[in-house]
Length: 431
Image (tube, rainbow, N blue to C red):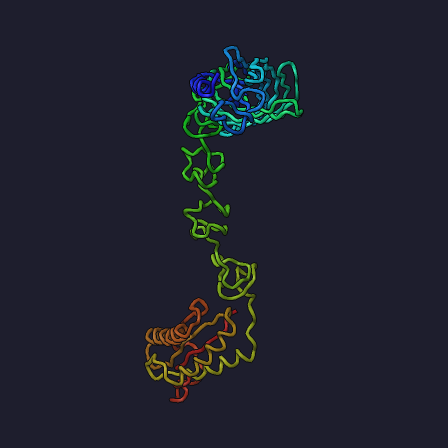
């Protein structure tokens, strides 16, 4: 049979031998087909005789109607398959040697691997490669061979396909023939696990899969949970961030019970009243500012963040008394003089040194007016002093103002000097 005729037959065949499209759903396969033997030659034909002195003993192309090839194979794993192959053909001896025809028999074992998707060989078109060995007899003379193969498969249905394949067989013995075997045939595959319709390949059959187009989890009937927080995406307000069920899948990174999107300080535990941020401790005394009665002064927990009271020294108390004795008012007046303000500035300095000491400001008058008028006038004088101290930064809660009128004179109202001394304000330390 000539070269062109052989090529025509091979390309026209709608057949295949067994191929790598087996998988765990089709672990077994059997096939039948035909084969052609190609013996490579060198040189060219003589222009006069038409003979090729270098083309060797056997004809270049060999195939007969009964050139049968049968296969049986089993899927192993990850796209690998082991195949047993038996072939029969005839090889013509070149003329003018004898022109005789010899039987060709071979048995081979091959390991093949799908090149498209080794672990999921379900493509309609599957190229593959393989390697193996076998034994070949020509004219009842046998020799071992090492084989390399390449081919492509076209799967028409889930069970049947079409294949073309070429195999190089290298003989171990010098008397053996190194040649190509080109083949094609039909195959039927069967056995293995039952194939289910699972479009998204998540292991959940489409008829049970609530999200058949997207890989998902069995616990959510095939629907996904991309962030792995145990809340399926369709009810997860933050499907790409692992979160908590109480926040519909949104995160609370610092664990303060405020989800991150509402938390101004998402990485530091805080409180809702402070927008998720912690309450500061400005004076670093261990008492947070929201309960610290002295947030800017280091204190103790027992005293609500304020320092333990320090008793005012006798010397400083005497200084306050001294400066207070200079606070004298004109008749009927509540106005502070420049000297009064200077004296009170000294008092402020001492009060600041004892931030928790409290004082009573007591106003007095002489007896020049009615008692009712004098009570009101003395209270206003005490208030004038208190207002000045507050304006200088003294906490008003530390000060009280009270008027005693003419009821507590320190000198006789019978003289002008005595009345002047009685028109006064005193600053008294309260216990």
